[in-house]
View 1 (tube, rainbow, N blue to C red):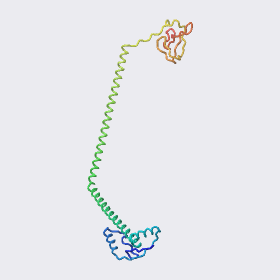
View 2: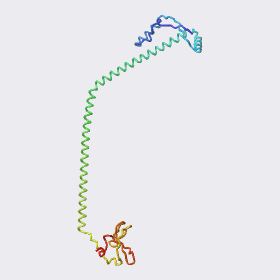
View 3: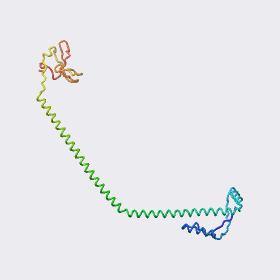
View 4: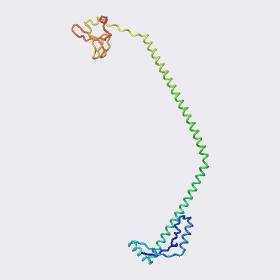
Amino acid sequence: MSTHHGDPTDGDEQPRGFEGDSGSGEERERSRNSRRRGERKEKILHTRISEQLAEDIRAIADDLRVPVSNLVRNVLEEAFSAAERVTDDVGDILDEVMGEAEKATEKLHRFRERHSDKEDVFRERMETASEQIGRAAESFADAVDRMAQRSRDRAARRAAEEEAEAAASHGTEHTRRPAPDPEPARAADFGDVVAWQPVVLNTPQRCAATGETIPAGAKAYMGIGSSGFTGLYVGEGALPVSQSA
């Protein structure tokens, strides 16, 4: 399939709309208008397309009652024009964004210059306040330690005084009321006992001489009568006088 397409430039020249430096939006608009007003030099453009696309193009051309070549040329021109408009709009938007970014950068620099001195003063004040707070905390901790130490000293003195008072009271009580010495058991108290057999108790037993409990494992004496064991136990230190002599 072949069609005629208007070439806005001479054979080897690069299209002006695709130069490296696009310039401002006004320059691009002037370039596009100048190209449209320029004399068209018709050239033949050959390309391969599918059968289905060829049938669709022919059907549309028949509906519009225009030649297929004119339809293809007009579609291509409109497509490139739309692309150029989009490129122009994007370029304008980028220019505006870059301009706003530069303005914001300048404002930030000016703000930093105006407030740099204030930041230094604020930093110095914060450091001074931090040092003062640290010294106050140390003083408070020392005061708390001194108070705790005084409390411990008072508690120790009070405990010592109470202990001394208790010892004095206990000593006075013993002085006033001395405990009577236990009287040793008499031989006559155990007239039925013929002999005392030394033993080691396996279970606690009651001392027949003092009435106290003799613990298990302690040494004791078991009373033996003429007919055998009398059932009496005497602690090691409570043996009757006549037997321990």
